[in-house]
Amino acid sequence: MNQLTSLAKSFQEKRQPISSVVADSLREAIFRAVLKQGESLRQDAIAKQFGVSQVTVREAFRLLAGEGIVEIVPRRGAVVASLSPADVEEIVELRIALETMLVAHAIPRLDENDFIAVDKIVRKLDRTRSMDEQLALNVDFHTHLYARAERPRTLATLEKLRLALEPYLRLLWARSDYKSHSQDDHRQIVSLCRKRDVKGAQDVLAKHIANTGQEIMHLLNRE
Image 1 (cartoon, rainbow, N blue to C red):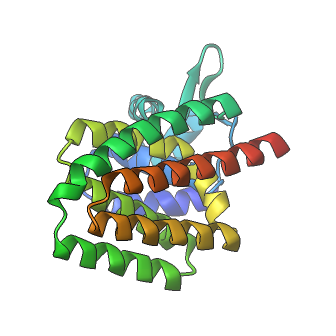
Image 2: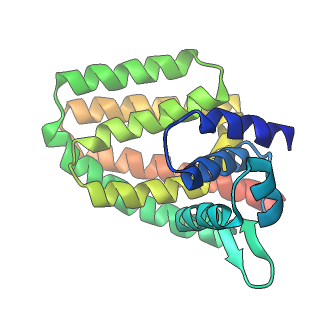
């Protein structure tokens, strides 16, 4: 609980609704495995820890449930969500459909400044050893490419799918071999985007997402 308190203090410094502060703190605690999958979240204890009302905590739970990070279970209340291999398979299928569509819309609009920016992200990913920074840069890489698609609703849907897999991605990025393979894919995707090879970029991107899904399912099956 000390780690959760520390996270709460860091997020409270930001100017945003208190329910969002609580949600951000709980989300980060889940991503860092401070709160484990399947763990019940006691509304009264969390309200006391944050010094807020239980109504505020319920709103935070609602926000996290909308992202698929928390489940509201009858007679148990809020529980940290757990994904089954079937859940992961469905999320991966949706991500492939959405991300290949986004990259197809983005490629004609990408300019040299965009390529310089994503190349910089890839180089920074090579150097960093911080797990939080690796995950943030990985998100930045994909977000920067897809932003040019100008599909805000699709991007919002994709963000929810990404958040559902975040705790598992943290485990994968902890493995040195995963980072190396992922970076190879990133470089190939950028190269194909530069060539305006939509089909090639879509194929590599689809394989990249599918391979990540397979790795996550292996982790789940070992539990």
